Length: 207
Image (cartoon, rainbow, N blue to C red; front, side):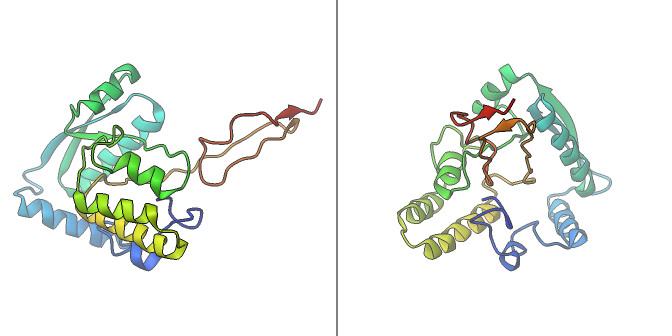
């Protein structure tokens, strides 16, 4: 879910740092990652070569390059493969990649929209094909919970579960801004998604 302070469902900092890779001590995180790679037989003298596939637009390509740079720190050498938009979604749906970087757009900051669309077994936008009966059970449980506080606790449990299970690792959360000329009036800008509130039925120009 969208993290604090903007995210309504954001996990508390003390809980967040317990997730794999979320400890604010970057050197510690990288040390643990190197240990994992070394147990798998990799190291400074034997590095893992992977192809990082992504859509050939700046919002995908530029972060993928940063990802490749970060992977070098843990004995992984990535080669960027940027493909045309017309081929990107078919490639992802067919899962024709070893490692892919994609953008997860969300219409609103709500667990149902996020979890059912991206992590539930059989969902068309569950690009990694992640499927776990326990995760599905928890997703259904939070959706039926009417108490907001209890639902938030279940949501945090789901996020912890997905992070530890590697359902779809989150690289970063971007921030988007909406700009307009002073004469543009009547536009309400959402605080938790750039993808809603664009019907423009109340927009007008003050000229």
